[in-house]
Length: 136
Image 1 (cartoon, rainbow, N blue to C red):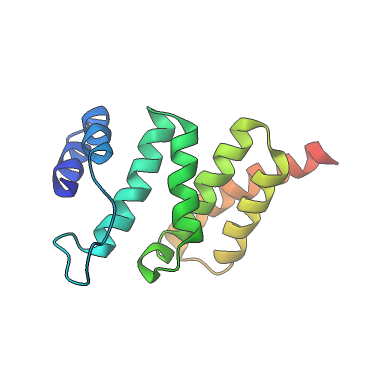
Image 2 (cartoon, rainbow, N blue to C red; image 1 turned 45 degrees about the vertical axis):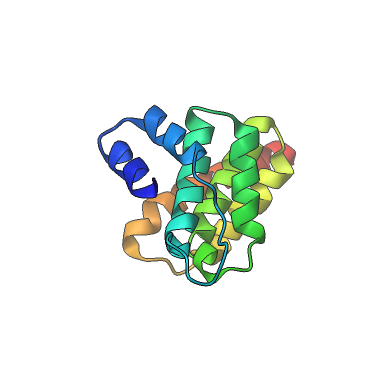
């Protein structure tokens, strides 16, 4: 199912990819699982992004919080994306302080990021600075 959602996403069918991800049960019933744990983390992130775009921010936020609060090293790989998306949700909801907090977390994490990530970091910094100016 996870592979199917990735193929649909590559084909540009975001709605169907989201429907497939909504049918996935994200759990590890035992130590040897048919679904690699790393795939589950990425799929939860993709689902949160698709929920933000197509579904609902509340569901997206719940998945992002799960990735943020997770103990799993597989989930930590997506920490920067979680901060960016949680900041965006908070900004869209008018929760300026939460947005600033999450954008600051991303900026701290990416202090010395790779060159190809600089445009994203710079965009987040501009957004964060605008929110700081609004709050005084």
